[in-house]
Image (tube, rainbow, N blue to C red; front, side, top):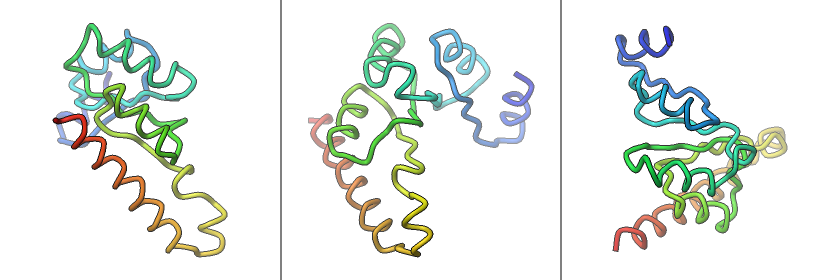
Length: 125
């Protein structure tokens, strides 16, 4: 709780990893605007998001851990109702960095972003 208060006071973004409804409620009570679901795949994936947003539609969630860089995974998460997705090593992996293949990282990032844009347009109809 002290970290959240300090971050709020200093206007620093703070998003603790939460894995239960109680942790999410506490994070929101402390002023967290986008709650990180971690590890996203282990706490129930998109079904967990749906279960939280059913009774708490105001909650803004961002899963990290288990968000794959496939159209199916991105679609499942966003259709469940997430606000954003944290995609780390599934997008920027060690092999691409080791070989300095930044073009592949750029291409994959653009592809994932295009899927998200398509989904948002589709869902806002």
